[in-house]
Structures are given as C-alpha cells and as structure tokens.
Image (cartoon, protein in one colour):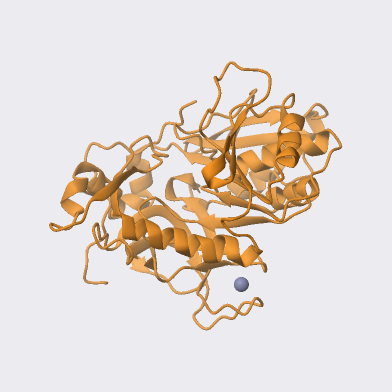
Length: 391
Ligand SMILES: [Zn+2]
C-alpha cells in the first residue's frame, strides 16, 4: 500500500464516477453527510449494503444483546414534523423497521419529558442517535429528576463519545452509551465492545496512521488513511478519511476476549484540532468541559493562531466562577491565546446536523505551515482550507 499515493477527499469529490468499476451491477448512490459542506457521492451495490447491515447486526447490536427484531428508537436529523410544531408528537412510528424515529431538532427543555414518555410508551429496547442528541436528552431528563429504566443500550453514531456523555446517559437511561465509528465511504468501521474498546471491522478496510507524511506506530496518533475492502464497485485505496486516530499494538487482547484489532482513540476530524504557535495539536478538550461545569454544550473555534472563540450554552446556575475555571482549563492546554467567551442559545450544527466540539478555522496556508493535512491534499486546489459551520 505504501507505494500508492494518498487519495484526498477532494479528488473523490471532483470526479466520483471515475472511482467506480467499469462493470458494475445496479448501484445505490449515497451522499456523504458533508460535515465540510462539500459532500461526496458514493455508489454501493445491494451486496455491499447487505454485508454492512450484517456486520452491524452482529457487532453494533449483537455485542450488546440486541437485534433487528427488537423495537428501537432513532434520535436523528430528519424533521419528521414541521419545525415550528411545539407540541408532541415529534416522532413517527416506522412499523417495518420497528423504529420510533424521533426528530432531534425538536428536543428542548420543554419537550424532553415527552420524548422520555414516548420511549416508554413504544417499549423500545435501545436508542440510536448522534452523541450530542443523546447527551442533550439525557441532561434534560436528569434536570427533570426523571429516569428511563428500560433501555439496554444507547448507541452513538457520527460523533465521538467522551466520558461526560457516558456518565450522563448512564445516569439518565440506566444503560451504557456505546460508540461506533464509520463513514459513508465505508473504508473503515469499528464498534465498541462491553469493555469500552472500539474494535475494528477488518472486513471493511485496512487502516494506516500517518503523521506529517510518514507512518507512525501503534500508540501514536495521526491521520487515518484507509483502504476499503467491502465495496468492490467503488474501491478506494489509501483514502484520507479526514479523521485522526490511534491504533493499539497488534496482539493486544481486550478483556472482552475479542481478537479484532483495537482503535484506541479517535480524535475527531483532522480539521477539529487546534494548533498552537509552538506546533502542538490539541484535539481532545473534553477535560475542559467535564461534567462538573453547569454547561449544556460548548464549542471551541480557533479563528487565529492566537485566538479562540468559545460558544457556550450555560445552565441556570452557571456563574463567573465557572467561567473563570473554564478559561483557566483552556489556557492550561492552549497556552497564551486570547479567548472570547460568547453565550449562545444553541451551538450551531453543521449542515448535516452534526455537533462539532472543536473547529479549526485557520486559513489553509497557516495549517500548511504547521504541516497540517494539506501536505498530501494537493489535489484540492481552490477548495479552501476552512470549514464553515452552518446553523
Ligand atoms: Zn473488547
């Protein structure tokens, strides 16, 4: 694989059809979620989709004692009912899939208890959704002093899972929050076992970890470069998925007994890393926002090498001492930067509704000067280096 060039997302975005096999069965087309606002098209055969669902059934669900025959709830990004609607239901029962589809957009302090009631009325066994949506629902349930007692597991997708998310979900739903990892391009996938480790699905793809142009060993973080094995109709070789991760050493054994390789950390998207003047990359800021601060949510955006903007949604008892603590914790990690604190009613989501805790909006030239992604991203002329977060 090392003899192949790295495939940047922009090359795929510009001419996606050219990555398809010449002789292919009828294919389904999927548009990637487009966190960058520049979605990619991916074609897949029925067989590829069937295999993905089978792997999900065995691993994402089977490892936690659930199956497709059980009733479940999806807390997702489809509106389901008009956005202006203020009274329940904010969900629909999708009978063929045994699925209660709940709109994450209508979730608020006023509606959370109705969501909880709906989960109980529909007797769902597990719930699936964006980490930030599950967390928001858990916080509202806890604020009301309520608790859901019948769920077996909550499965998070599309966003990283931090320890404070787990703690809130465990307390509110009485069940663990389990992470999954994957992308529409299906070049890598992983799911969390009951011992809290993300096990890779080797059938889906091969992962390499590359930092500043060279491969790094197990235990060190870097950009994930993945070669897909599942989708023969649109094979992607050494594709830069845009996320950073760390692999566990081969031969590591998890207490769960599974021998599937372990992805020991996913740091989120390559663009979700802050850069300090001294060249450090700071990706995980969860210790800053841990559960002891009365915050509903917060987002850190780097707008210049020496300036951060923090947008936060405070709880009612958030005061200046909490503010001081928050700034002090940030400073411990980022050093001498200007920090602008902005109180907002809601942290803006990406176009596809994803929450991003860390956003790096530094210009492309600055990122390049610090050896950032673009060292191999040279097919991306004119694509721009920053990702706008749209509301
Ligand atoms: Zn395990």
